[in-house]
Amino acid sequence: MKFLVQLSRIFVGVLFIISGFIKLNDPLGFSYKLQEYFGADVLNMEFLIPYALLISVFVVVFEVVLGVFLLIGYKPKFTVYSLLAMIVFFTFLTFYSAYFDKVKDCGCFGDALKLTPWESFTKDVILLVLILILFFGLKHIKPLFKALPTTIIALLSFLISLWFGYHVLMHLPSIDFRAYAIGKNIQEQMVIPEDAPKPILEYTWTFNVNGEEQEFVTNGSYPSVDGEYIGVETKTIDEGYIPPIQDFSIESNDEDLTSYFLEKDKLVIIAMYNITSSEDEGVAKLKAFTNDAIKAGYTVIGLTSSGDAEKQKVKQEYNLNFDFFLCDEKVIKTIVRSNPGVVILNKGTVMNKAHWNDIEDLEF
Image (cartoon, rainbow, N blue to C red):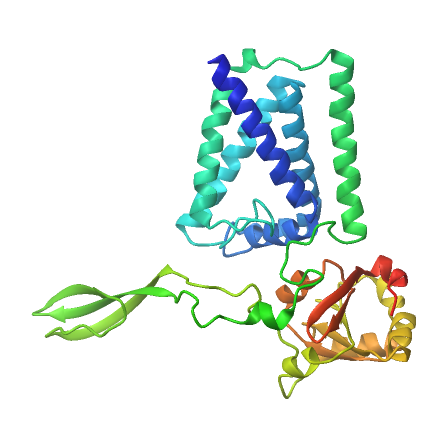
């Protein structure tokens, strides 16, 4: 039992630190995932959506700290009970998501590692077993150091985690795992190779045969059945190859301008997924920044999901010298974790990006 406890202690502690740190690197991204869970079609807890970012920071900091606490043996009873409560909740959440097909990616490891709902549930079940071993073998969890060093390490883990979370919120994630990271080419990320695996679908056809409903399963072909057709349902067995970027577009009210702008040598995108909720201090910085960009020969455009009225209002209020084009809100949130944020492209390749706090540091 003692050996199992120590093995579980190391595995659970390290996994919680890694998982927590990846999400702590991008708490805003994790808050978007929480908003999905809080939505009407999942948990129907929409009253929590305004607090998603606060909950996100609390959860990921707590996750990292619990991992550290477990490894150093600080307050083992509190640590193990907290771990058990968290894993029971997340096991229920991932099962609910998987069984009812609500959320396609749990966000357990942020954008660094995508897990299907059933993979997430399996991972949580394994963790639940390991944490139950810790629960029943609690007496075998001893501090690694004396009381004072253990307390200092525990306190430092909390303060450093809190500082790091604040730092990336005020700037951008320190490590960008997304398809729009610096150096990535957007066009290349949108292409589906000719030899890429194709989706595999299963078709369940329902026919009335001699007064009785019968089902016939095929891979897409219409079944040869002597009966009256009633309906068909499709099920995805394998999604095949999914390009890293699927929904990126730059559109006016009349046409799709994606290819046109992605061929530009010097392009600055001002990303504002929602103009109404953008940071006023950040928007106020845009005029001087875009003036410098235009003088340096850059084409400057805005990307937003907001309507024409909001676009005209912000242009007039801040005397902005560029036009806004349409893009999906979720895509803009993925491109840059800032509202407003700045992305610099060269023929579709991301050369640089910045939080509005740091646009003065960008050089042309």
